[in-house]
Length: 126
Ligand SMILES: [Zn+2]
Image (tube, rainbow, N blue to C red; front, side):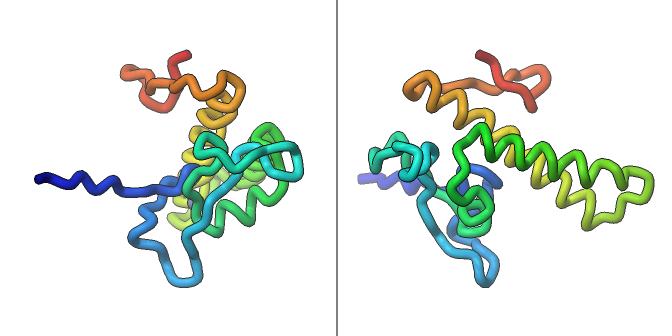
């Protein structure tokens, strides 16, 4: 008998949950926060690192996307003197925006999955 071990990744930053840095823990995020009417179904509870979970807080996905885009634009203002650290921070936010857009669509369409656009890869095909 073969067991398929499904690796779990943070639903926003994509970090491997088996390999979390010190101080970051395994949590579940409510895509629609409980305080905004979200429930405990598996469709609404996704694996999430504690960093992203506390960053999202009680925001819904639209609010979280607004927040991420603001942060992204702030960092982009320093474009002329990009350090490696800044570059990886920007890259991480790009991933979070990409994934939060996915989950927003997912919650709005009752779980219809999106597929990556194979040509551009960083866009969703609706
Ligand atoms: Zn995360």
